[in-house]
Image (cartoon, rainbow, N blue to C red):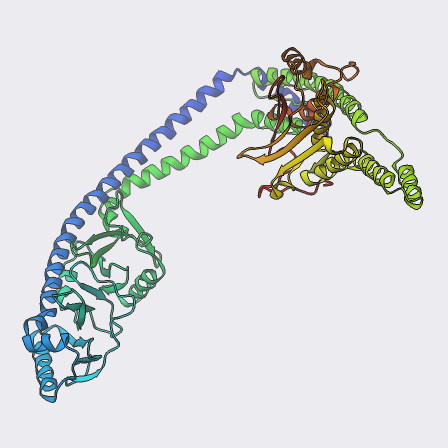
Length: 608
């Protein structure tokens, strides 16, 4: 039975391999046309939806601007009312003076405040603060009679607008907002007092009742984003108040010059938010309308068409899904094999279902086998070449001397009262230990210690004829670089800088960091290098072999080591001049993130 099924499957696969791809592609294009039809229908609906919302936004902004104009007129009437004490000469004089108030003046102020309070029907409290006297007189919310008490002064953090008033929320229920207006002295524009009163919602009640659509919520904010009034029901009111406390105006949709509709999700419903501000910069009137109400008419008219389109779309999507799965199965299998091949797993792939897929599988198998053979050959050759070059280069700069024996001889010299010999031997042993045991990549600080040992040995031989100056920022000593790179440059300056009647030399070592690289500069005031020899040295960096009998093998050695470690990201420049003002300068430019630098700019452990 198992053999029968296998034979049957093989027969079907062989027949599918003979089916041309164009037949499958024709069916696929038919499905694409169906999908395009659905997409176009959906695009038309979305365009109508945007048009409906844009029309609603235009109408709402116009109506909201009219409401704001009425509210602005009401607030300006409050502003005119708040400065009535300025026109009362005795009260205004008392506010500007600092002398204690007489009983007659106190009673007159009490009567004046009582009169002001009953002048308007929309007041719930009224107070005048006499800052020079530290008193406040007025009628409190929910209480009878006018009383005097100590004034708390100007509210902390209060910001007045250009018309010298501010609108603030009230802590009492049933209050529209708290209005604060300063009273100033004309001569020096200093604040001598301020009026403060609370008003009931009658000033906005009519506007809030004139909604453009069902479910619209009208909110009033001050410029600090604090909610002053909302006509929302209790549950939604709490959500709006919470959002106003937790979010800034931009997040809450209170941006006045928005280029696109602003939406806000509250209590599981999406609202379209439209906001306008007054000219005095004190209030923002915001309208929140459920998107469901805006689009309800459009959705009702298109409900039947949407149901038909949805059924048609479902059939089309299912058919397209099955067809694409069928057509893309060979390509999916090929992609999986390619991914495995990228990870180093070599396997054959057998694709069917069309003549072209079968041919593709055969070509792919031949290609992968050939690539695998070439990769193995090239990898082995490249690995052998690099290992041989690194071994040859490091063999020249890392001679394996018996530094333990040198330390033993140094100890014997110290016991025989020969400190100079002891210093020479210990420095030499330290240099040899560094050249043998130090990792290929070291910190700049470790490399400088090695240079110090080398310079000390040379000074024992040359004395004051050798001067070495360091210009290193201490913050750079953690950066990484190849070992024995700086020492090679210093050694080259000392060996080739003296001659031709020159018996002393000064070497300057500089390290500085740029935006993308680390520059190391070694310069000397030696005899310099002639122009022809300088050109020969530069051209010999890449062509010179390690066995060439050339006195500048050290520079070629260093160049090739840096080229292996950094590639073309590094650079080594050689400058020199002979005669009067002679000098030689070598500039190394090393990329910052090629030798283990962390993202924060510090070096890793060199032994890592």
